[in-house]
Amino acid sequence: SVLLVQIIASQLRAEPYLWEIVMGASSSNTNARKGILPNVGCCGARGNTSMLCHNDLLNTYLHQLQQLHRQFDSAYIYRQEVKIAPQLQAVSYILLIQRTEIVEPNIAGATTDSLEILPKSLPLKVKKELRLDWGRDGLAFTELDYRLSDEMLIRSKVFHQPLTPQELLDQLAEVQNRHYDPEEWASYHFCYHLIAQTNGRDYDYR
Image (cartoon, rainbow, N blue to C red):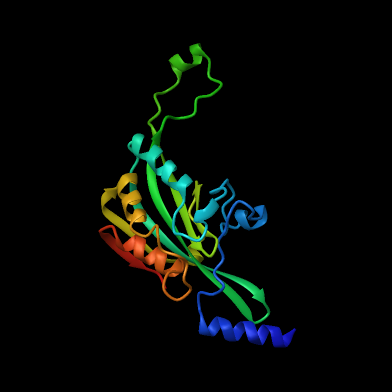
C-alpha cells in the first residue's frame, strides 16, 4: 500500500543502509548474465557466525590461494541499486579483489603428431575476481571470471605492491568480531575500510 511504502521510505531515510542486500548462491541466472549477481557457488552455510564479519570457508579458500602463491593486484567497489517498490530502492556495496593468473593455452584434442607442428603458444593471463558481500546475513564470497558492470563502479585501486592472501586474511581478522550495523558497519563501511588497508593508487568514478 501507499502508506506502507511511505513508512519504509521514512525508515530508509533515517537509516540509509537499512535495506542492504547480500547476494548469495540463490541469485537468479537472469541477473547474473547482466553482471549484477554472481553465477557460481558462494559461501554456503555460516552457522553461528552469520551475524559476524567472518566466514570460515573464505578463510580456508584464502589459505589455499596462499599455498599456491597467488597475489592480488587491484580492488573495485561497486554500488548496486535494486528497486523494491515504485518509489523505493535498496542499496548495497560490493568489493571485488582482483588477481591475475598465468595459464597454459588450451590444446585439448590435439594429437601427439599435431603437437609437433603446432606453433609454440605463449601462456595466457587470466583475471580472477574475489567478490565479497557484507550485510545482515553475514560475510559472503564468490569467485568470478569477470568484473561487474562499469555503470555500478564507484572506486578502484591499483596496489603499489601485490596483496597476498595471507595479508588479506590478516585484514579480515581485524574486523571478524564486528556485527552488522546499518549506521557504523554496513557494506559501505566494510568495502571502504578494506580497500583502504592496502597502499595503492585510487580512482574515483562517481
